[in-house]
Length: 167
Image 1 (cartoon, one colour):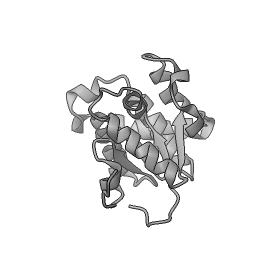
Image 2: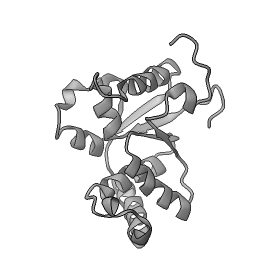
Image 3: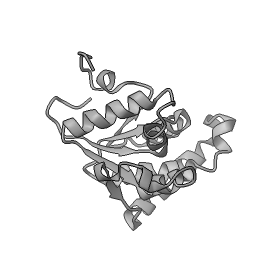
Image 4: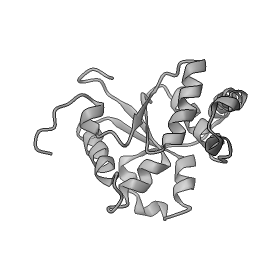
């Protein structure tokens, strides 16, 4: 984990965005906690145009607190890295549970991982998706990534090794 005072760059996936705007979701408090923590520390919070497109299936993008996010478009350098990541994942299909190999979303996972990998300021990928974490481990085991996964199921204070004092 980063040292105290280090500035983070966190790319948020679609699951984070959904939980952030769903007060009844069990992970809503964690999503709000991460957002508050990152804003308080003046860390950079990114959202991919890919995640925004996925989010728009369920809700209007205008319902998100976009003022807090830096929008990351999908570019040619991301496309190249995404192809490499997808090739790694597809070459290891025999190691992936069936419910993940059938997932159409794998290319979107690899696209957003590629954005995190190519964008130097990004240090972490915040996700609520356990299947996405499986895909990440396959990629990371083949060629170590520059960024780390932050599972939304783990509260921010635990992920960053902080004491929870009256949140």
